[in-house]
Length: 252
Image (cartoon, rainbow, N blue to C red; front, side, top):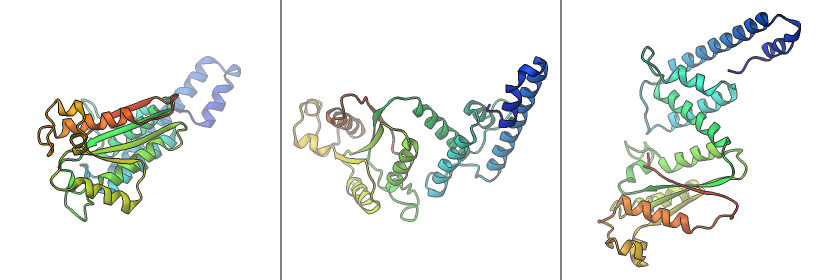
């Protein structure tokens, strides 16, 4: 737990005080700041819904706003987790706040990483509704726009660290690829590559042909899409001195 400037000044003058007195001041300062932290977290929790609505752009933005506040407070993230994640005797905080704590911890962990390029792969089969906004569909999550905002927030200020999203159409009959491309162009989104698994069939790539890939991609779907994305990332050039990290995930 970070101590206040006043407590740090008092602690620094410990040579002029009895050790027990300095310890008491340290303990009092830490307890006071923990009390203030708990009070602030409780205040925030009281304003949040009891469930998480992934279709709400406002909630998604609130997660990042609260994560920023947590980081700027200088509070020990482990202490924040203890106060929000719940226990055998304490209920967990609302999901929006827990998501914010997780985001704050992710940014702290990223700061410990050296320079790298991160590729995030996901398959787009049946994701046409999540790609839309809630105003366009009741299950709309505006996922492409929100994922870009989240990654921009995570990597902001991280010199030598870059990212990209690789979305792979795996034969979606609802034109997820075209919809995603139109959203990218409409909102001017950057760092996104849209792939089509059908191209692996058109190019007769041995790895996929040997495993029975058909033109409609019906025999592969998500698995084939992820593998095609991995192949693309492996073939993409980055500076030799920059490690390349690749992950795959669900769209939500």
